[in-house]
Image (tube, rainbow, N blue to C red):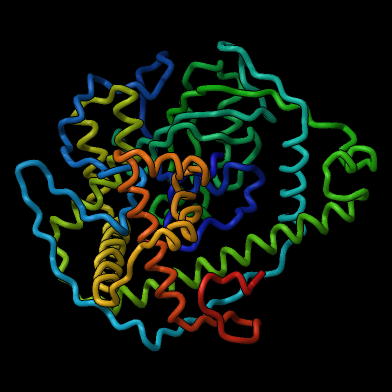
Length: 415
């Protein structure tokens, strides 16, 4: 699947699910539903969506929820609380080390590398998809006839392959024509990330937007083909290169985990009174930027849109995550004001690439966007957050289990 999905925490680890979609589809929560017998299901709603049931909208796609002041619902002015700047002295965190790189992980990475070099052919509209294809899908989950919160995903790219995470999903899509929809039922395994859904029957409504036939080489481990991968002249050299690549990614993930733990300390140290209404609005903005867009595009009715939003608002973990983001936002703002941090041009240049990466923008695109008043503010806000986080990380002391020394700053020392 696409790597542009937004996530929380220290970054997504690589799942050993047996197919590429594992990491991205993890956050879907779905269950059983029904459609009229004989009618092929699609993600189209039951009525015209006005979008008026939720008035709050994301202030800007480039503005992180951890750095913007939440907008108030129409007719309701939200009073933003004042936060006392937390102390950033004496912050110490310890990050546990990941396990060793497994043979399964290496083989999966090799499989992905080979697929990236395989011959492909776009399937025509109406052509059925098969196992081994790469498909782009829109999907939505139902439970007991109700929309499942967080289950609406658009433009997901995945390999049609068996998955331990959602057994039977890809198998159920075999034969579905490109441009049409399919209903797929699965039983969520005991290892499913959403604990309360484990063991339940789930129904996915899936629209197959596009597909590519992938013809894997029969001689993927031959010396001749291995040399075309550009990672060495032997299979052993390629595997060593992939292991180094995974190790570098894990170093980045470890530092992101350290950053999250430091921000958790900022959360604990920030004194700010968050109202229920403020948390609700933060959730509304996140919903508006993600699930609401797909539902509106699929012509879902206002009552269905409201049902989706209520699922987000009532989810305990979502409320905790929203409160955490807000505490980080107010805490960082207070630190910026107290310590008189300024986003100078020099600092903007230093953090710009990191600031726009979550939005999928290149450095060149970000620089162009800075010249446009409509997008410049959001980019500068995202850069200000990165600057503030780097400032806090420079004051913190980070230790990694099994690694001697104490680290601070950007984490590049782990490379």
